[in-house]
Image (cartoon, rainbow, N blue to C red; front, side):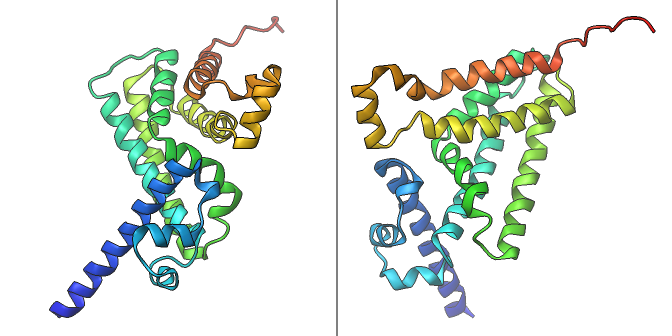
Length: 221
């Protein structure tokens, strides 16, 4: 029994080592698109063949990081809004933007989850990710609704917009070395690499304001 417990503990520790290595490499090499399992296992001090004991594929490893990212965003937003009441729509949008921008790996992964990660794992792993992310999403919606003046439906639309904008703007604002050189040569095109958080905040505040604007009355029948 003790041997089995120690074996399970060691397995969990090595899985965490792989996740830690992936986080570090993603930050150092320009994003998860550049990650390879070989590099992750080497950084974690494991033999390349050993990774399959812990994760079936690179996609499964990255999906685990995305799943944890939802928890981090939920906890970060909850702490950020602790004690807040009656936030205006722009203030609610700013909270969404600020907390997302504080989680660069999660922002990066939001591009890859629908593009490849959740579709390249087995159905039970995909189910686990969906169950976990939607639980965090529900808490995010409840928190934003309780602390601000937006309705539940408006908050849901704001989060949907935030996720889509983040997935796109994060990649644009973190260009590959080739594109970074191109923008130096062609400054006119460099608008595509403007700061991530200011643009996200501005667009989300405009969205929140639009969602909560009173609908003009139409002509009388």
